[in-house]
Every structure is written in C-alpha cells, then in structure tokens.
Image (cartoon, rainbow, N blue to C red; front, side):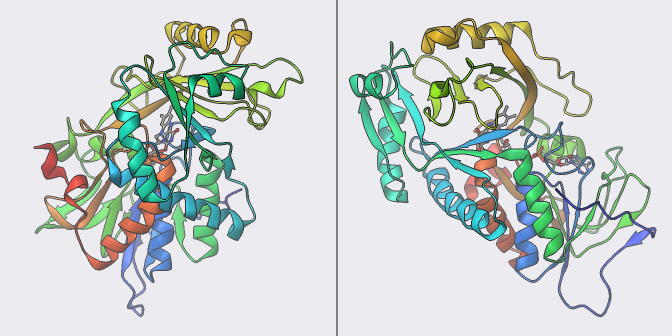
Amino acid sequence: MPKAPRKPNNSRKSTPRASRAPHIAVVGAGAFGGWTALYLLRQGAQVTLVDAWGPGNSRASSGGETRIIRGTYGPKSPYTDMTARALHLWKKHDKLWGRRLFQKTGVLWMAGENDAFEKASLPMLRKAGLDYEKLTRRELAKRYPQMNVDNVKWAIFEPDGGYLYARLACAAVLDAFLAEGGHYHELGVLTDGRGCDLAGGECRGIRLTDETELQADRYVFACGPWLPQLFPDVLTGKLIPHRQDVIFFGTPAGDARFTDQQMPVWMDYGQHNMYGIPGNAWRGFKVADDARGEAFEPTHGDRTVRVAAIEKARQHVAMRFPELANAPVTETRVCQYEDTPDRDFIIDKHPGAANLWMVGGGSGHGFKHGPALGEMVAGLVKKDQLAEATYRLARLG
Ligand SMILES: Cc1cc2nc3c(=O)[nH]c(=O)nc-3n(C[C@H](O)[C@H](O)[C@H](O)COP(=O)(O)OP(=O)(O)OC[C@H]3O[C@@H](n4cnc5c(N)ncnc54)[C@H](O)[C@@H]3O)c2cc1C
C-alpha cells in the first residue's frame, strides 16, 4: 500500500536552490501522471506529484479493478507498438517490485462480418513483435465450449495479452515514486480559475486546495477527465468525459470455466461493442459496453449504475455465455472515458505556457500504455520537446 502522503507544512513549495536538477510538478497520479512522474525522477529531475484524491481513486479513470492489455488496434500503429513496449515494462516492473500486476490470460478479439479492422491489425501485431493466432469459428468453439460463437466469423488470439490490476498498479507506482525519492502531496490544484498562474508565456506556479502555491520549472498536468475543467479555453470539446457502466456477474460455485483460469479476456466488437474480463481475484465476471455513454462530470457525477446498462450486459452474456444467463449481479461500477474526438491521446504544451504540458485523452484505452507513455512523456518534458503530431492539439482544429 502507498505510504501516507506527506502533508505540506509551508505555504510555498519549491526546489531547494542548491540543486541543479530541474524541478517538475506533475498533477494527477493516475496511469498517465504516476508513470510520468516516476520516469521523470529516473531521468534525474526533482519531482513533486500532487493528486486531489490519490492514485487510482474511485473517481479516477484509472480507478477500476482491472484493465485490458492488448495490441489489436487496427491500422493505428502507434498503439500496437506502444502496447509492446508497455507490456515489456509492466513485466519488468512486476519483477522489480515482486508483484503480479499483469496477468497473462491471453486476449480474444472476435471479428464479425465486417472484419477490416481485425485484418488490418495482423500486420501491425507482427511488426510490433506481438504473437497472435488466427482462430476459425470452429477452433474457437472447440477451445472455449463455454462460449456460444454465433455471429463470430473468426478471432484473433493474443497469447501474451491479458489484464492489469489497475488501481493497485497506481498505488504501486506511487510506492516506487516515493521509494525512489519523489515527493507527493494529496492536494488538488484549484479549478476556480486560480489554479495556474500563467503570465509571460509560462506557468509561474500552481495554487493548491490548501491555498499554498507550488512552484516548479516545468509542469505536467495529467488530470484525466478533469483536464477540461483546468484548461477550459484549450480543451473544451477536445476532451470529453463519457459515462461508462461496468457490471460484474457472479459465476457458479467452484466453476473455473468463467474465471481467468480457463477464459481469456474477450472483446466482442463484431456486431456488439461489448468486452469483458473473466472472474479473477475472487471477484465476478466483468462485462462492459464500449459504446460511449452520456457526457459525465467526474467530481460530482452520480455513479449509480443504470438498469438499462445491466440489462444490456445481461442480454449479451446470455447470448455469448448461455450458462451465465441468470447469473446474479455481484458488483457494479461507473467510470468515465476521457475521450478525444479521434481517440488519440493528447500530449502537448499549453498554448499560453511553454513550460506546461497537458497529458491525457486516454479515450478508453489508455491504462495499458501507462509505463510506455510515462517513459515517452518524461523524455519530452526533460528535453523540452514536443510530441509527434498524432498527439498534438493542432490535429483537433
Ligand atoms: C470502464 C473503463 C474501462 C477501461 N478499460 C480499459 C482497458 O481495458 N484498457 C486500457 O488500456 N484502458 C482502459 N480504460 C481507459 C483507461 O483507464 C484511462 O484511459 C486511463 O486510466 C486514464 O488515466 P489518466 O491518468 O489520464 O486519468 P485518471 O486515472 O483519471 O487520473 C487523473 C488523476 O488526476 C487527479 N486530479 C484531477 N483533477 C485534479 C486536480 N485539480 N488537482 C490534482 N489532481 C487532480 C485525479 O484525482 C486522478 O487521480 C478504461 C476506462 C474506463 C473508465
């Protein structure tokens, strides 16, 4: 578990003058900010990390129990390559930290009649060095008799994919950050317009919820779905949080067929937008709809799951996993995607502050990339460079 956050004891937080290492403030300790802070530290910076509610908190997009890691991404190569790097880094850190945050179950991606996306994914997987098998419908039915394979034309099976323990991973990253010399404050940056002191083309400090000011040489804001609240002029319409309901069904007693012992993670995007993670850690069989819900406000939004979402999940489970048709709902969760219009991430400087980077827009697929993205962003911030055009705001008009 993370160490107790250090409470600030002064009204002004800044780098000791004796140090020549740049002081970088990272705001947000989710998948993006936590890993970025850790890699900045490893690249020799002094890093102060702040988060309003803590890493993987129950409002955060990274706050779920589990997140999928897969390389099937259609023709969008940056994320297949990024997955390959991230997978390597997740495994490396599991070894380093003596944890098992990554669970290798394999990932099954089912293709329907229109399989252009899946076909385009295969060369990308090959190029990234991620193994895959092409399974015919018949092979699928034989391998997973607990599944009804109607409407599935064929499937990609990534044997090296799986899922990650999401909120635990965020806590583990904070643990490592503290152990490696980082400073953490559980405080928010004010969202009432006083949060960032922008003047003369740079950020001169950030004001926190305890009314202290944090000063650094550079700032990274990785506030997930909250980013547009901090920078409404820049991000409104370019990053939109959407409500996503997640349902967990209880599996039959002693039946491993619906747990990660005998089922991979599955993506059913042929005719549906559904995906799931089999039972694990003694929790239920997770099912969720990848279709975007309504716009959602992450601080005050009501996280009571919708009956319609339960019904949709149940219908899908009854069709694809008939023996779970009457399975009870054991848990529910409401999270939010922080979507960009094109689903590509945002990694860019604030147009009014040359020392302030905004990092977010995970768009429902960001978690897995945490370590690879953190490594990349830390390099950019440290060297004061811009990201590739794919991630820059100019692409969004
Ligand atoms: C239901 C669901 C399923 C998903 N499934 C997958 C999946 O299977 N695989 C995958 O790769 N991705 C998945 N994602 C997407 C992924 O979880 C997100 O893209 C990723 O977690 C975003 O991380 P983040 O660090 O940008 O945001 P967050 O995790 O939201 O972190 C932002 C942090 O900023 C802090 N913060 C906010 N405002 C302030 C402030 N003013 N001051 C200080 N701190 C502040 C918050 O407390 C929070 O901790 C899923 C998302 C959801 C919701």
